[in-house]
Image (cartoon, rainbow, N blue to C red):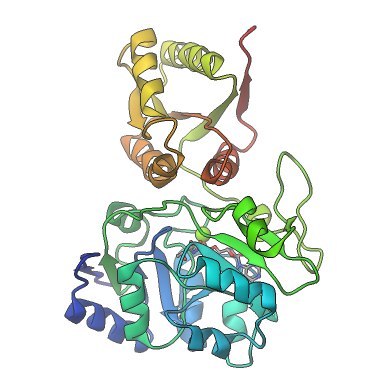
Length: 360
Ligand code: TXA
Ligand code: MG
C-alpha cells in the first residue's frame, strides 16, 4: 500500500489536505493524525470493518479497547449512554485536552471499538489540526496511538513512518506533538472515579475538580484495579519497548550521575554501544566524567518537566535507530507530568531499575 503524507500547519491547517484525509477515513481507510499527546491511528468509529483494520495493522490484542476522538460536545452525547456529573465537570475543565474519559457506551458505538465492553473511552484533543480533521470527518474517530503494539507511541512523522509506512492510507504530518506522552485516562462509570493511566492532567488536577480518585494502575508494585476487577489496561500488556534494553537510574541526583558514569565505562569496556537519555545538564556532566563515547539524547533542562515529557519518547526511538545495545535513562522528578513520565520509563525498563545512593 502506498501511504500518502499530507503536511499541515498548526497555525493554518490546510483545508484541502485535511478534507482529503477525512474523505479517506470516511471511505473506510486508516489515517494517522497528530494530537497534542501523540499521533493517533484513526478509523471511522462507526464502521466496524474499518475499526478491525486498526487491530490488524498494529497487531493489537483484540481485548484492548480503543478511544473515540470527537470535536464537539454533541458527539459526546451520541457515543455515551449517559454523562455523569463528574464527567461533565471534567469536560468543562479539561477539554479539549489530554484527558480521556470512560463512560457507559451508547448503542451507536460498535463493540469492535470497545473490545466487547459496555464502556467507551472518549477524548477531545486540544490540537488545531486534530480538531480540524475530526470535524471534517464528522464521525467519532477510533484511534489508538500510531505505533506497532508494544512499542513507544510516536510523537513525530519519522516515528510514525518507522512503524506504519505502507500499512496505512494516509498520514497527516503536524510536526512534533507538544505534550509527548499519552492522555490521562479516567473511568467514571462506577461509584468512585478510577484513573487507569497517568498523563499530563495530573491526579492532583483531577482531584481539584471531582474530589478523591482511585489510582487504578500499579505504582511501585501495587496491584492495579478496574471497575470489574480486571487489571488496568496498561498493566495487562507489554508496553513502551525499544529494541535495545533499557536501564533506568533513580534515586539521589549526584549519585545518579556517578552511577551512570560507571555503567557507561563498564558497558563500553565490554564492547557494547551505549545510548543515554537524560536532562541536558546531566549529559554535560557525563561528558566531562567519561568523554563523548556514548550516543546522547538531551531531554531538556531538569527543571522543565513538560519539555522532558515532550522529548522522551522520540529520544528513546532515536537511540534505538542509532542501533545502540543498551539505553541508559536518568530518572526525573516525579511531580506533575514527571509522575506520568516515570510511570512509562519504569515500564520501558521493566525490572532494570538501578537505585542510586550517595553512599555507594
Ligand atoms: O493520548 C492518547 O490517548 C492517544 C491519542 C492518539 O489520543 N491515544 C492512545 O490510545 O494512547 P491507546 O489505545 O494507545 O491507549 C488508550 C488506553 C488503552 O490502554 C486502552 O486499554 C484504554 O485507554 N481504554 C480505551 N478504552 C477503554 C475502555 N472502554 N475502558 C477501559 N480502558 C480503555
Ligand atoms: Mg498505545
